[in-house]
Every structure is written in C-alpha cells, then in structure tokens.
Length: 272
Image (cartoon, rainbow, N blue to C red):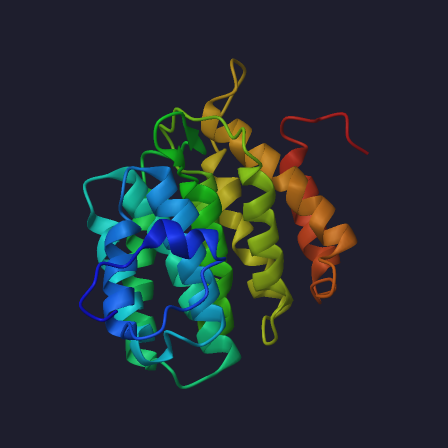
C-alpha cells in the first residue's frame, strides 16, 4: 500500500484503524495538509479524527515533533480554519508528551509556545462556527492548547493565565460568544490554576489584566469584548466553586473567586 493513495473515506468508515504498510511520516504529512483544508469533512471528520486516535495510541510518536512544528507553522496561515486547528493539533501533541515524556524536546515545545502566544490574543476571527467552513473555534481551541502547554511547561503557568486574560479582553472583536467559548476558556484557566506551584499572588494576579481593561469605562452599551469577558468570569466562578470532575478545585480557588466577584460587581452592582 506504500505507493498507493491513502483511502481516507475507507479509513473513516473503519474507525481510523492505522493502515498497514504506510509509513508514519507519510500519514503525518497528509494529515498536516488536510488539517488546513477549508472542507470541514476533510479537516475535522477525517484529518483531526485520525490524528486524535493515532497520536493518542502512539502511532505518531516517531514524528510527533514534526507534527508539532507543522501545526505551529500554521499560526501564520492566511486562512482562518488552518490557524484555528493549529492549537487543537498542538493540544493532541502536548497531551501525548505529557503522557509519555521525552517524545519531543523542551526546545520544540518552547518554540511552539512562542508561536502560539503571539497568535492567541491577536486572532481577529473568533467565530465559533461558519456555515461553509464548519467549526473554527479560535478561542476554545486556543484555550485547550493553553491548558496543554501548562502540563508540559508548568513554569509558564503565570504567563498562560495572563495570555488567557489578554484573549478574553482583546478589544475590537465583532463576535459575541455563542458556542460555549466562555466555558472552554474558564475550564482552561481552572486547569492551569489547579497545577502545582502557583502562589496565591500568581493565582490571582492575572486578573489585574482584566481589571485594567475596564478602567475608564462608563455607562452605555456593553462592548462585545466586555460581554465576552463577563460571561467568561461568570463561568470561571462556577468552575472554581465546583471544580472539574476528576481534577478537583484549585488550591487558591477561594481567593481567585473573590477577585472575580469584585470585577463582576462592575456590571452587577447589586451583588452581595
């Protein structure tokens, strides 16, 4: 089968069992190209579904770093669906590295983080869904990647919290969260906060970014970015109270929730 075209529809119908006789490098190269496709069937239902299984099962271990490099390179892609599936792919790669440390180098992960951190707060197209392109989900996919980076590079947890704050408060966004982006972002922040080593000050300090974004605000219509931020903070407050199933509650959850409530009193001045 090595010289034949990979029959992706048949692979999908078979549940993406790894095809015999096809080198991992070739499959990874094809998957990387397909993950930039504007066709949601090709990109999501085939390429991402295959990558998710094959990375998790270790079939791509020998080319894991190459997959990560390819994904990170798509943050500069001119087409939105290619950019927004890059963090989703990196999440798979990073989760595999967290499960089996040593498959990729720290230098590679640091390199990917540089590309990701430049893209995430700056992405202008934050739509969750497009009728032609399907799922885009820059905010949600980026949140998943932020939590995955925190697992592999725990020293970056304070930076990742600030990155999430910059994403939620990015001005001039036209899209109002409508596909549970606030919950995905809150889940990521909760996971980052749950990791070991964060002080109380680090756990709370990133919210200064959010508070500063509201300085100088006054009466009038709520801007889209502010609505998105308030929705995310409300979701975060719930996550801090209940925790994530199987993962618990962050050590400094009470302090973070108190600071979140202080910020939420700006729009909800009637809160106790």
